[in-house]
Amino acid sequence: MQQLVRIFEGFASFHPELLQHWQARGAKRLGTEYWLFSAETALDRSAEASMFLRWSMTVDHAWPCVPPKIEGFVDKAVTALVKKFADSPPQQVMVSPLSVGAPHRYYKNLAAQLQQRLRRELARHPTLEVEAQQAQEKSLFVLIGKEGLFAARATPQECRGFYAGGSKLISHRAAHSISRAGAKVAEALHLLPLWQPAPAVGAHWLELGASPGGMTAELLERGYRVTAVDRALMDPRIAAHPQLDFHAIDVRDFRAPSGVKFDALLCDMNGEAEQSLELVIGHLRDLKAGALVIFTMKTPQIENCAEIMHLRRRLLGRAQKAGLRAIVQTHLTYNRQEFTLIWQKI
Image 1 (cartoon, rainbow, N blue to C red):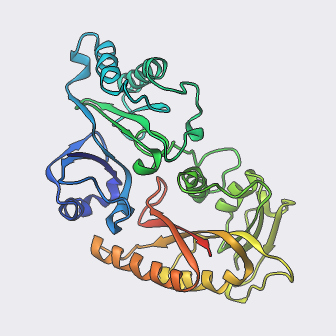
Image 2 (tube, one colour; image 1 turned 90 degrees about the vertical axis):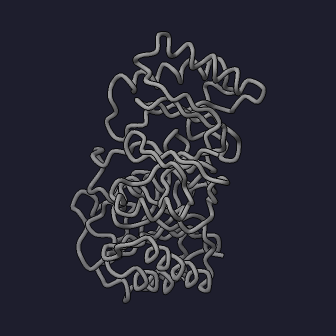
């Protein structure tokens, strides 16, 4: 069966190792960051190597072609897809170009036209908002580019995203943004409903290593309360925010105020991942049962997949012993040589 996956271009040196791990046959590059290959079975989304995937789908319908050279391409594509999937219509239809970032205008417009037609003729809930899709209910995902059209009827959870190709592009230049880090937590919270609801507005977060406040600003913008801890100071734009309680001390020395229990914990600290995790574990006593933990696993000095997966294994094992249940490990758009790990306190 054909698999279409998306892997960060910054991991280009890892691509051969990953394709071998998945026993890929006839692997072919598509667009930017995408690979199409054949495999005996669908990829195991719970396997270690899945942490490198930004998107993954088993292709149900493929039309290798050059769209600009096909007269009436949209009509022909819609006819074929409706015929293929009409017996079991999807909850919603999502269409995206295979080019990541700033796609060619032709394919961007083509994707929009195709999406509009398919929603009208095929989707059960054509006006359903993207993030209102049921994570475990099947949608139709279509990717289109100069190599052709590729479609899958699958759940957002299976594919690792509500949009075709992954998550929506979240700008790190929004008015409230302080740094790129804010977009990381925004994307993590965008994807979280694939597995469980995000913390409710008004939830109280503990953020370890918060300075200068990129992630803090994003949490505050979403209506959360934040207790932030760092020796370095916060950006003046948020330092006096009424929902921010900042402690200018070392994370190791922080003690939660008496009687305070947090709904969620966020840690994007630089340094050795295992040392950072120990700091997180040291503050699990300050979290409510069921609290969310979002952790950035830094891997700047690791040069192969096997070492990264081994580090992940050690972190997951240590976290489990400390009372954390793994939800997902993934590579976000604004992650570089790092991964986002999400847990829940048992």
